[in-house]
Length: 116
Length: 114
Image (cartoon, rainbow over the protein chains, first blue to last red):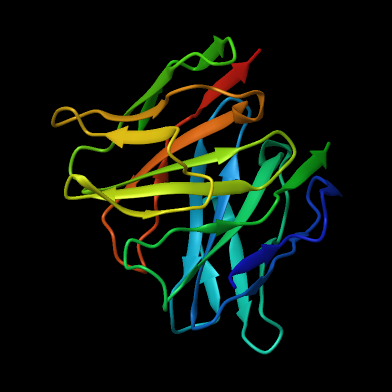
């Protein structure tokens, strides 16, 4: 069965410091992995995705994520956090053995707070 | 930049009443989805829709739920007889289909059933 785990409900980091938001997944086949961000009163905004190829993918707003197949992880990272990065972050996975319409399986979300 | 829009942003209803949540997907997208998020829980898939029919639905999407694309722009989710446990944020999404393509989400409709 497909699932996503985000082990931390909250991550707190000082502005200028690196941040990591963790995600692990479980799928039957090969994973397609996504990160979304949700600001208050807004929908989920796409940040980045891993499909195939280079394990380090870069996305919007300076975020990047590293795919690790052996650890079944897809952690979100940013070298230098900004206060404006404070938001709710969701990891999602799609299984290549599933429907081509590709329902997404989401984690619970991690609240990132960056303090000045 | 094109966006998915949803109306209303908030809906309060009495248990047993019917509600219709509306969405306008991105215009050149052909694949449409509804998800929901109960407060404090995961975002959960409800249904996917393509070519004017349901492609996949989850165990949550029972006979009380239905979806429709009544015209070329709107995509609706109807709950026939709401229950307290239907209270959640409902997200509409659209996409171009295919495993590698992301879905684009609307801002959500917060449904409160009293």
